[in-house]
Amino acid sequence: MNPPRSRFFAFALLALLMPALCQSQDYPSKPVRLVVPVATGTPIDILSRALASRLGTELGQTVVVDLKPGATGAVGAADVLRQPNDGYTLMVANMPMSVAQTIYANVPFNLRTDFAPIGQFGAFYTVLVVHPSVTARSPAELAALMKAHPGELTFSSGGPGTPAHVAAELFKLTTGSNALHVPYNQFPQAIADLLGGQNQFMFAATPPVVPHILAGKLRALAVTSPRRIAALKDIPTMSEAGFPDFVVRDWLGLVARSGVPPAIVAKVNAALGRALVAEELKATYARLGADPVGGSPEAFGGLIDSEITRWAGVAKAAKLRVE
Image 1 (tube, helix red, strand yellow):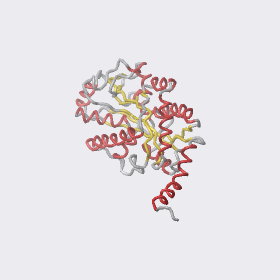
Image 2: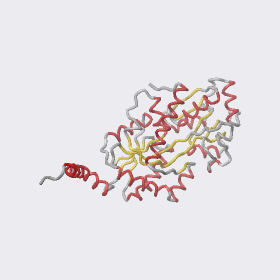
Image 3: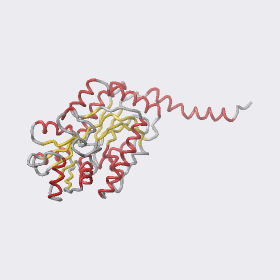
Image 4: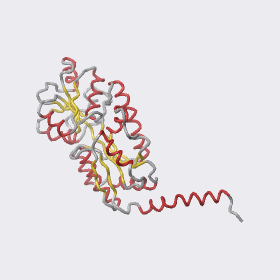
């Protein structure tokens, strides 16, 4: 007697799912590669390496960091999309990749559909700094200088679409002022030229500039975080300085190629959560002025979606486009 049609389809479906189920149960049975789409020595590189070390401990396998810088994440994303969606190649997604969706003419990836969010693992903020030769002592005074000398002041960034770039564009829109953007291929060079006085100000990532602020080589005017940060506890937020809701953060999170088994996503997310409460990791992040941030894959996916929408609006208003 033939089994009912529904039972046949159930067996067929189980046969299809069995390899993925077995794979998920054994995962990870070999080292995991973590693609980090930035250059060495950048804040994201430093934070990602700190995470990879602890994540490997929680997963019971080595997590190997593989830097793939270039084209605001496009080089790293293209690499991941060429790999099997088995969870053995993960990637660090960040805020500039959400901006790239809008400002670049030909982006070879879709952050919403090509990748499966696993979980956010960090966030750090920018701090508005000026060279000591600039007289401004507050964001409002800097805006006044920019209005008095339209297009004469210059600000540096690590390239189009980076937090330093879009934060300054948002500041220009908010204040109705103007300044010239000077992008660099290498973030350290952007900092070096700011320290040398070639550029007058920058919305710089906190990790690399905190030492220069403390040494008096740069003057901090405000941080773009929703609250004051421990590394610069005497520096007001942009909101405290008179610019409500001016929050710019470079968020970091793990993604895998779309189609990765949900059980693997859940396993990595759980390991990520355990890694983020480890005292040594929290201490490393605090020292760099960054926050360890966890959460579910769904929450991280929602963040990605909202950030793409937010920066698309800023890019449209500021007429930002890179061909």
